[in-house]
Figure 1 (cartoon, helix red, strand yellow):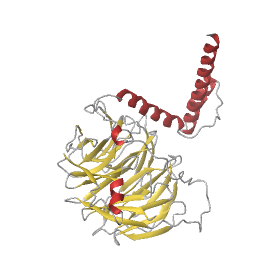
Figure 2 (cartoon, rainbow, N blue to C red):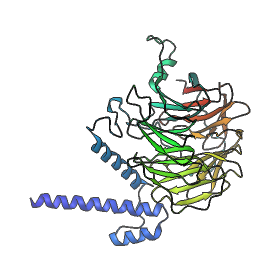
Figure 3 (cartoon, rainbow, N blue to C red):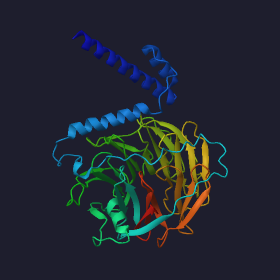
Figure 4 (cartoon, one colour):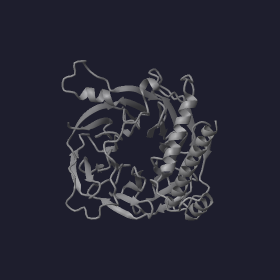
Length: 436
């Protein structure tokens, strides 16, 4: 018995040491030096202890997800979130390669990579403009939202089957669900990280929750009524919270279990033109970013909701239309109506790279990384082309006809493979995948 107790004490001591190291490293990485010193001194932990950036946040997010999974396991599907085990949803495949380190290489001249050739296929048409698209975190589904107020859900395996030259099983329908529950155009979509739940934000001031594990469900099973036009939505990696970017200059944070809304108490002064075009969480939820109509990119602490950095005039006086984090959460990629795509270093607010040569001044255009972060994709409005840059060298490496009649207004890349979606003012949805 004494031996077992001693082993338990030693294990707990080791766990506490690991936890203290992660706390100190986390505080240091977020420039909370005074707090890091205090914890290091109180716990006899070296101040310069090494740990991957945001490792603590990553472990907490995973732990919360597991805890929620255990809590909900066995609960009937009529509850808030059906885990959708029949669909095998939420089991994310390993990435193809690790993300690019943009700070590692100084001289990148002449080292641009070639973007692989892709084939494309028309998937479906909405009855009005196809305004937005989003892939599920596991890359198995993609959803599109339209000005006709409908949402279409596609299964990627069915899309690929449809694209085969000789399909022996006859016509394949890649649309597996269609949802109708908004009364105004849809602005943005997101998937719950673990559960078969899709959310939509729309001009009717609502966020709606759809359970796509149910084949017959057409309507939302829960609704958040906001006070403003909901322009963008983003789930926290734990799935317990979501952000809504609206016509209000401060993102609205919602608890998805209680629907209670929180606003930042430490927000900067933002003018009347501060409506949020896009809001996105980082991969661990430690931060989120907003791209606003006033041209600013703002970075926010994911816990305190304090604005930790504002890059005013990131796109001069033009609207900032999109913003997203790199996987290592050290950089943000932004796009604006000044026809510029820019990469910013979070720690300093420094402009690291510009991706030039595509004109976008009219539509709420996106710039996105491919799944490996080796390339950046966006739209050239005058030529109706998709433009691709080498992410590291910022050289333009490809320019392809979009195959849309009229300019695509949204481009979204799969998080797991060489494939992306384009949505058009011509109402159509196209799927692109690498030629194998």
